[in-house]
Image (tube, rainbow, N blue to C red; front, side, top):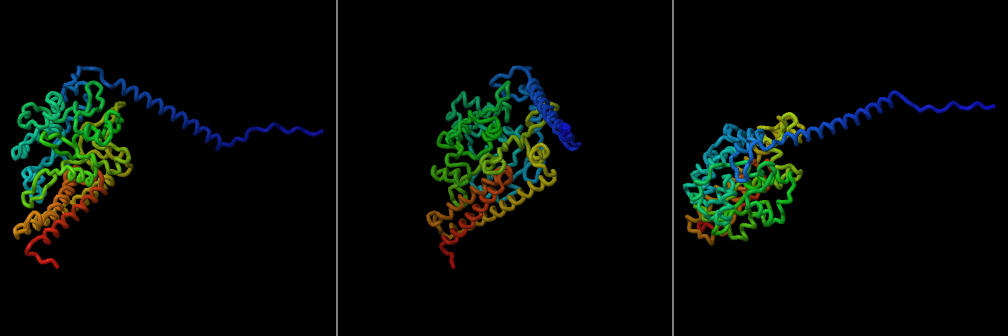
Length: 440
């Protein structure tokens, strides 16, 4: 008679039991974190202030907004600090013309050759514009107030876009009292991001982009791009226009201006038809790795900070070099010293290229001056003058962009390489056009 086998028992080992325990614990921990995150978001929603005071649609005073949004207001008011020093920026005002004397001749005949100071924080946006000596050199249009005065959108609504643009700045100056304001970028009550400047809307529309359909992440760049861009005053009405219909890089912008047969001024020494670049942060950023990775202006210059369970954007707009922990280390896990060194290395390299380009531009100006003194006509110097224009605008694009190359290091280097090349070509063309020169 055969004996039956005992029933098979499940095979268990301490290792398998430990694994099951760890997996189970991990699942429970994940659920706990999920519930905590949900609760934090609920807390944030509840923390969004009720109307302590009603904010009117036309309210511009940041202090009134600050009653309902004290965290944002308190950090914004830190932009009054004009003592911050970084190697190539900060908030301390100084004369760039004294620091880089070549600028006086590079911009000869243009108001920037008379007065060009390092900008302070956003708090001083209007104050510094009212004080600049450039106001005394040339009669600026009201268009200049577009980005420097919180009153601009309301004046545009009252006067009309073109009428506002062509009105002399002196005629509206007494109506301007506030620089940057919460209202520039936010709707009252909800703080939803919005675009308030027509020039940006028009430029994006020309590129086929409807800003009303932008995501919140895109808006965290767009609200900055209302002002931190290259621009010019178009036509007799001086309408503020961004030259983007061909594209955003310097070659596209040059093509736009060439097709429009536009010049900002005639160089006092050479007679070349010149272009003055402004502060093309948005354009330069657009070609960089951060833009390609979906990183916005606000992510680095206004990073999120937490106060307990509350998460808000830090409105102390400043260089990330002064705030590496929040601005950089959220994504980059290197030591703070390593990140700082990397930034400064990029900026040092860009600054060296800028100085080399400035020397080449001065040599080109000298060569054109010498050719004219020897009897060369503008017709004989046509190539030299055009190359002078091309070199100067490229140098200016990088020089006036407020990151010293960091927003797009490769693009900054490419632009300056072309600027150097064009400046030397202008110098050679001028020497060849000099009647008494001997070319071997």
